[in-house]
Image (tube, rainbow, N blue to C red; front, side, top):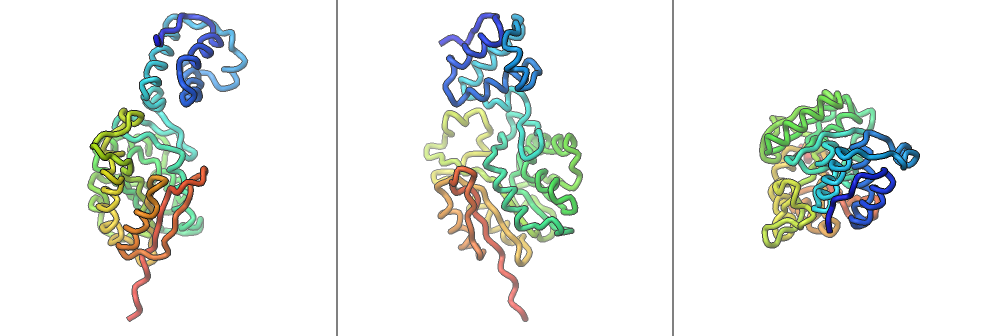
Amino acid sequence: MSDCIEPTTLQAWRAAARQRCDHRHHADIEWLIQHTLRINRAALISRSDLPLSQEITSTLNSGIAALRDDVPLAHLIGTQPFWTMELIVTTDTLVPRADTEILVHAALSRLPGDHTGATIADLGTGTGAVALALGLERPNSEVHAVDKSRAALEVARLNAQSTEIDNVTFFEGDWAEGLPSGQYDVIVSNPPYVETDDGALPSNLRHEPEIALAGGPDGLEQIRRLVPAAVARLKAGGWLMIEHGNMQAAGVSGILYDSGLTDLDTVPDIAGRDRVSLGKRPALPEA
């Protein structure tokens, strides 16, 4: 089916676009229109008879073609909302998902607002979304964020500048090995956990960086790698928290248990699906 829609009014183009895309892209169409025309939701409704120029129509048509090819909307408009921030996103970074905000909530619940001087690490930071959200909500903490992708770290640093969050420091490296010396109160990670039996990502994820998604045959390959080294960097009583797929809680909890963590728990996302598993490093025995 052609993605070319002839120049017309906003209302007519919007209706035609919704017919050309399946239901999962309908919300993205609304955002694409608002971004391209630089209007808000109210104007989208009230100015439905707005005539569209050939240039605007061509831009919108290109956007529809990209959406139908499963290009993330964030790649088309260059930003993605996360927590209370609007973050820069590129093809070098995973698009931050709302589900990952559960990881932020879990960490904040173990870091009371009056907790001063907390040390936090984010392993595999990508856009910096989780690290920046934690730095924003706990301004007296020190947050260290690690990624092995230099290009992703450049995006994360831009996001730190644009949000004016100054208590997050970024490091290039492989999981906990990239951290500077010291121990942490909380370590969080949203690692690759997509099952890739044949080494290929699902088609709807093919436009995002494989390094941030592919988790091996059972999705737990990178989690097995990162957990032991991360546990070694926790303070006694510190927490490690891992985001994972909704069928992976048992596997991740088993990895945490085998690494010596206690007080294991799994936190669901807003749809009630298992999303974050966590455990605590036990206190050292008294001498």
